Image (cartoon, rainbow, N blue to C red; front, side, top):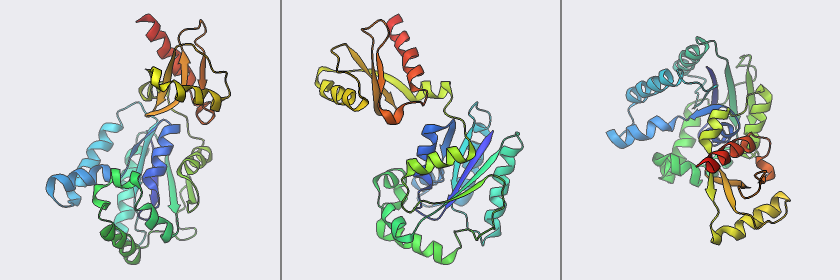
Length: 271
């Protein structure tokens, strides 16, 4: 079981890049606040021991799955030996399975990170950050108190990349990581779980026609089903024609979606 550890300062984009990386690989995202937020909601405050225990349970259970690996995010204080020890404890678990550990360090200007602290995606997944005055102050305080960016040559791991994503969109950073480490794309089983077909309603025909134009295919009157991946409409397939006419928007091509859509279309026809 492989592990990708994404590290960096607060609001640098660890979770968001991890979300994008999950879309194009066979890795699942386990970001730091997936355990922190429930603990705060249940106990009314942060409890590090409970968070650590929950993390351990997730690690142990996940390593029994058939995924290629996990994406884990962590804010690493390089001047704290306890953080070095913790990372080693986690990575040892995955390496013990015969897996490979990849390290990704993200760095970005503080001004940009404070802007990212206000983004809808961050606040949706991290309720404890919604008091912006408090969370902004925490970001500044943390990097004043701890050293959250590695020194040149400090991290000597075989599989390590440091990315300045100050001006880099998260999907581009994710593709950079995938290509740098030559990570495998989503498995067929994973894609089957993430992609589905939804019948196009009459009131949705204008959207279908616009997607056909964007994909550079002729507008057709055949009955279509939207191809939906991770909640986004990425193309459409017609079950009316003998060859199941299919198109995908350019940015979603060559990701294994076409084969999955064809397979799901056969199930529709059988039913």
